[in-house]
Image (cartoon, rainbow over all chains, first blue to last red):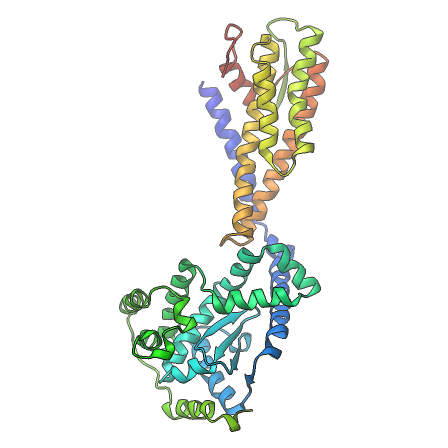
Length: 270
Length: 149
């Protein structure tokens, strides 16, 4: 009996040993898997954007772009992220919403920016969307909803308008799973604290756009597709207290006011 | 890994044929139901159940074939679960996953070769006991016990 047990241990050891030895080889680099998946994601991202962009009115005002990029810089530089990896697009839409698309594209509806009374509030939503990208939630969600075969075929042959509509619908209209949203909120708090921005601004914008007093915002997509706001705010504040804030960044309000004015004054925009 | 041993008695032609078939069942099932590892096990299990009242020699080889398939099923189930969690879940392809995949392929190939070899030898009347699986089979399959397992 002991003999059999020893043989059993030897077989297990042989299997686990082979697995351990093989896992020391860097297959990801050897087979170029990371690059292949990044390339495929870029292609999917470009196809989605090529489908999405012509249907929407993108605000390409240089001043707005410059100011929003400077806020992206603040978040990225303090978090060892490269701002060049992300591109922010503002589109004219009355429904306050923001969402991430493949290939690190973040889309803001101009109405959501108008609802951010401070640049910190905008940074909080930006941090949340960056967190979705950082955790690869965008591709994971597409993979879960559409299947890996469709994504692969898009990356090779492009896509039809029905798939394009489906992808945009999935990423802009539907929330990620609660697990992903919690993960994104947690990372957003980390990103904000590292950038010396108080996460309390995150709760402020969440509360504002879900506030009942603001009738036209009750059905805001960004809020309605996310978990319960009160619960989220509680968790964000708990995380904030756990982390602790050492110092705060002084972001110019003047510039933010300028962005808001530019977004409001339609004729100057494009 | 393999040992040719002398069985308790000299099996006849029919027994050799049946013992060989017990291994062939899993080999054929691999060809038919390659994407689903459980098909191999089900095929071997059905063959075992069909022959559980047969002679000791046939039962012995059916049991060894069944045990080896059970081991392969456990290992392959891990691969299936991991792969599905990558396709539909949160997991991503990592070095550990690729290493596991290679290890599983090597184990499956080895098992396939051993099974095919044992099937050929069993048909020739040679009694082959596998390392570890042969010992387990000896433990659970006894000459007196008609309904082993």
